[in-house]
Image (tube, rainbow, N blue to C red; front, side, top):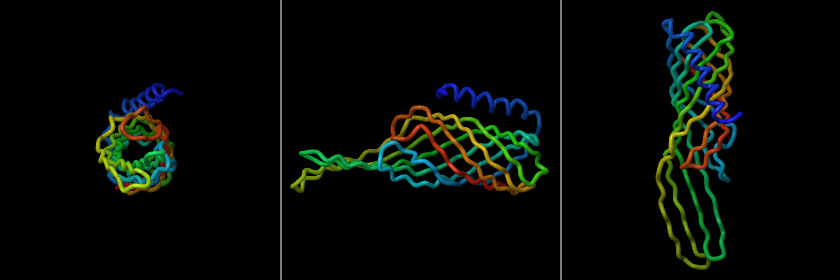
Length: 205
């Protein structure tokens, strides 16, 4: 399935949730979401990313079965490389501060009165990466070293998100372990992968 079809499906699915839910006053729950990145996250090896992801979250539960969730997720990305030439050695090191903003429609298979509430979710995410790094050029057999500092930011990335998990707890306090897959579109500015898989745990009040 192409990236465009993924986005159209995600937008249509979450819009369906919204259209069927906005007629009711939502129950809001605030909290935090954290977890680990299962795959590498960057395309250039060796990667030196931190596997954790963390950030605040809010969920609006409109009915027993429909809700909307918004996250602001931070992750630390990193990569380095060494190129050995005949006349010089080039060391490249990059670090990125990534912020992702997923907006997800959620369908619960059971109502709020149940302690265990399985769900599926889909929607879209926006991502911005602020990065810095340095390039060191060294001439073998000499003490000549040139260092260049690089800073910048990526363009805004858009990805289709699909997930599934279970909400555990009754009332306003709950935990939500889930797996989440994001298929990112092309994004310049940092060597990130297109496929992103995370295991997340949300705690809400």
